[in-house]
Structures are given as structure tokens and as C-alpha cells.
Image (cartoon, rainbow, N blue to C red; front, side, top):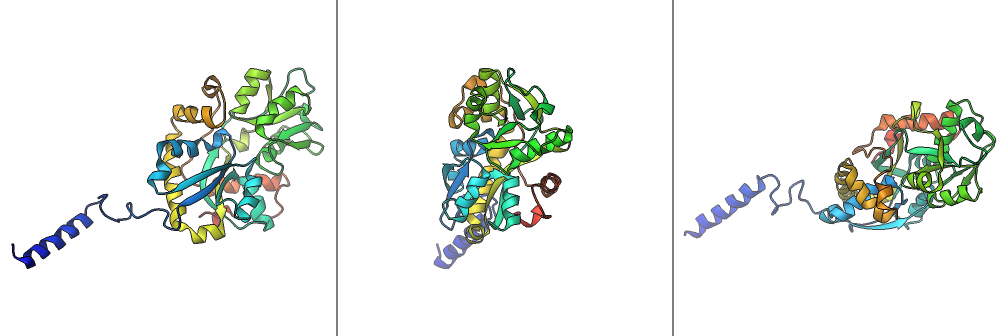
Length: 320
């Protein structure tokens, strides 16, 4: 074959391949190298049901497929993950929106919101007490010692807002910090009068300790309240846009998978160390696939109404 004709045909073949969407040989928009800045994400998580999609993504290889090496580190709550990001020990952390907004408003961190994680539904964010204790109903919570995983976060806000909605005085409540894992034992030892417990520890406490719900915090104005999501620092976001895009794509796939309850049950039995029979009974919220700024503004509004934020904040300015 004439060498000029052979060169022409080769160039035409390249042009044809470039025009074929999704061709695995090319670097089109969906095939670009992912995580170009290093592709390692040190991710802080709380071992609760909210982060099930992270483990679904790990198991399904979604992060690997996007070229991201996710290294999981356990934190007690979003409030603990924020200083770890500021110091450079974490790149991204799961946390509750209340802690993120508080840190941003106080100027203790400059944060960017990477992805939504979990939204509430009735029956999955409950204040529990033991039936032989002093707390039998919401009105009995006034002046009591209530366990939350960290102070000044969404669990404290949920308790405050729900008590206020029930006309119960929250001013004298003693909020006590402890990991969710320890709350059942604390109730049984009478160290606390009640506890805001989340899944999968909620179902365990009801089944194993006979704990009873005295207040459902995800009702009324707080129904489907955004609970938590994933954030990073503005500095990390500026230096690692491709890595964060790849991380979000992988997590988004897993968030969609989490609509299948069985996928959630499979992973929480492992990372949260709960019996499969408990996993089958846990109350689930929802796993959104995108950030809804209007819902986050509602979180800010509830924070201000309950004295947990002293100035207005527009979450849309924080969205990555």
C-alpha cells in the first residue's frame, strides 16, 4: 500500500475512534485519568449506618475503578474530623452538617462540601431510655442527662429542636459526650438517663437492653432533615479537583446502590460489627445522590432557632 495512503487511513482511524463515545482506548470526558493529583484520599468516617455507601463503594471497587485509593480512618464524629483535616491528617471526612456549619461560621475551618450523605426519616434518630428509669416520655427529659456522640452537632440539635417542639424546657439538660457504641451500656449502668442513638446501635439497644423510644427527633419540620455528608478543606479542594471529582463519582454510584436495603445490610454487618439479624431490622434514612442547598438552609435555620448558630450562613457558597 502507498505509504501516504497508509498514513491517511491511520489518521482517519484515530479520528473515528475519537468520535466514538465511551471508547476505552481514549481519553474523552468519561475516560480521563482520574485522581491526577495523587489519587489518595484519607477519609474520616463514623462507624454508623450513614456511611454504608463508602463500604459499598470499597466492596464494589468503585473507588479503584476511578483511580482513587481511599484509606479509611475512624473518627467519633464530624466535630473530630474537622481539626484532623485542618491539621492535614485527613483529606475528606464524613460529618454532620451542624458541625461543618459551626466551624465555617466561627472561622475555625474553611470548608467545601463534597457530597451529601444521609437524610433522616421518622424512626431512625431516636432518644432512648430504659423502662425502669426516670424518663418515660419527652416531658421527662427536662433537666436530665442525655448522651450524644459529640456536643454541638446534629444529635444535640435534633434533641433540642424536638424537645422545643414538644414544649419541653431544654435549658437544664446535661448533654454528655460518648461514642454511639457505648450508649447502650451507659443506659444500663444508669450513667445517663437517655441517649440519642442512631442505627445500627439503635436496634441493638432496643433488642438487647429493652430500651424504649421516648422522643422521635425526625418528625415535623425535621422530617427528612439532612443529617450529614462529606466535606474537605478549601485548600485540599483547590489542589485536588480531579481526585475529588473521581471520589464523588465513585461515592455517587454507591449512594444509588444504597437504595437497595440488602446492599446496606451486607456492609454494616462487617464495619459496624452488628449481627446480621440486627442489620436486617435497622431503620434506614435515605442516601441522596446530590446536595440540596435548600435543605441545608433549613438546617441553618433550625440551628439559629435553637441557639446553635449566631449568624446567618449560606451553605450554597460552601458547595464544591
